[in-house]
Amino acid sequence: MNLEFFHDELARYYDSRTGTFCSADPLAGSPDDPQSWNRYAYGRNDPIDITDPSGKSWWSSLLIDIGVAVAAYFAPEAIPALAGAGGGATAGTATMTILETGQSSTAYYLWGAESAAIGGGTAAITQQAMKGPQAPQQPPTPQARFIHCNNQYGTPNSQGNLTYQGYQYAAQAAQNAHIPLSNELSLWDNENALKLTTSVPVGPSGEIGPMQLTPPAYNTLSQLGQLPSGWNNPANPEANLLAGARMFAHILKSQSLSNAAAVYNGGTGGMNSSAARNYQKNFNSKNAQFQKMVNCMH
Image (cartoon, rainbow, N blue to C red; front, side, top):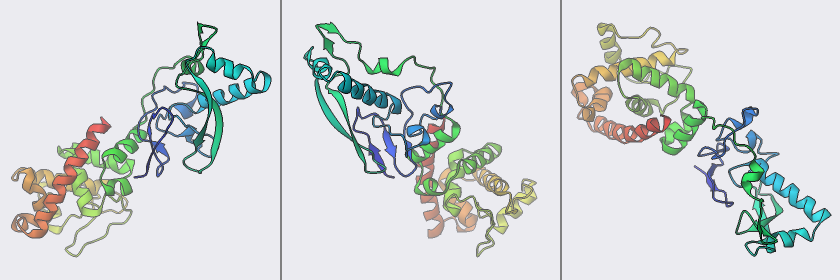
């Protein structure tokens, strides 16, 4: 993951791979501006034309630049007076590097303080004044939260392959089978790296679908009357995910979690093979990771 940290006030981490911030904007969006509702978005989802050097507000820095430029044109003497009258700040320039393009721009600003004293009085020049009235905070969209939580806590496979739709399918399957969502995601990660394929490949032992159900597994579910309709249909991957969840739930009735993944992989007769034990080890590690991700989603 490529994370950049904005220098100005060190507000938020930025993920240059997804083009989004890794945490929510501390400033609320505006009810009249739908683009501001996604508090993980960078520069209103328009990084070509808009920059956000502080990670807090793209327009406040723009207004500051414009205001100082106007003051410099009409009353250049006001800039050093504004900064130096109270002795609390000095004027300077800063080069703000735009991380995506490598371009830079220069803007006047006040070093060391957000407000300055003018003529011995208290200045009203603060960033809060620039921000204007604060709207009620809007919660991030589920998709934005998924991106954030996956970037923070997901496995390499989930960060590369898992979609929000796939996450929803897995959550529905886990709920239906009464198993933790972290278990379902860990099995799916082990089986086909969390790919929501449109085709259903058949493995060397007859494994089918994203959850790679073997003939003994789907025969068992069929006998129990729990084999979902369309479980082997390429256009219905959610049914395959549900079948895998139900099979794991069935295994958990007779096995502990420390052995259940090995049984899912090798059956009761092969649960102690080196391949099955390695499968269990990977499951344990991923399960702990996905539990953090699931907690983040809530």
